[in-house]
Amino acid sequence: MLDFPVTALRSVEIVTPQPAASFDFYTKVWGLDFAAEADGTVYLAATGRDFHVLELTPGGRTSLRKVSFRARSREDLHTLFVRAREAGCEIISPPALSSAPCGGESFIVREPQGCTLEFVHGDRIKTARVVADRPERLAHVNINSADIEQLSVFYQQVLGFRLSDRSKLMAFLCCNSDHHAVVLAEAPVHGLNHVAFLMPDLESVMRGSGRMIDHGYPIGWGVGRHGPGDNVFAYFVDPTGAVIEYTAEVLQIDDSYRARGPGEWVWPPGRTDQWGIAPPKSGACKAAQVSVPFSSWATTGTRV
Image 1 (cartoon, rainbow, N blue to C red):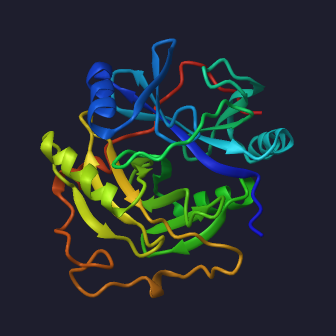
Image 2: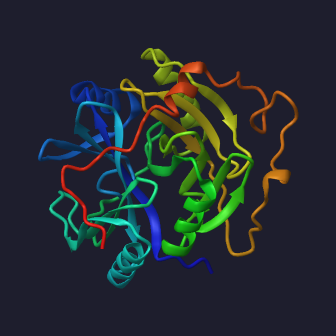
């Protein structure tokens, strides 16, 4: 049986220089709902059980402020904190009751390559519902790294993730039966590559993509089907330059799944996915995938 101290990717926080435009886009076009607002941050929900999947915080430049994961138990939460501290993470806030609308107990650290991570247990959940053409939850977050191997070791040895596959340019890491919750992409700079939102099915990916096109947002890459993870995808660039993805049909794995290496994930020349029908990734999408940095925190962390 798969056994992880982290059980799910829960949410991401994006700093946006256009909070009103970002709110309108994610609620009126992308398919999220308003959940709460506190201290200037807006919390947006998908249709699944998570209280929220996206936080929008006003700021001067589009950036990734944090990625949030759910811990299996309070004991796991505190064990993860000790491991993160011993691994040299910068402590932004130690375990404590969260003041966010979702509640629960949480801690926040910055891992050695600069991405801020939050871990939470006991946060509020809601009744899930399936709504065609609208996101259910986050599927994965893709992080750019100039040293994938080092960061992959951190996720595995410190946070208890498992390597599910390794392609030439990416490492895929899981923390439950989803093939991956975190993807590490080789890049010249650290930062956000993209955030993927899980749709109910392929039909929803197609119809959601059509809705985006109707509102003036072209497909940056897709619609196609990835190799590692076997998931359907369609990539877009949001109004402030962050890359987001509709995805569905993510491969479910168990302990019997064998991680494959770069030599086994090879496409014929000119092909970038299983189907081979999508046009090449747009220049705007490529540029956006390396343009969103990690943001700094107003609170000064302490390395202990």
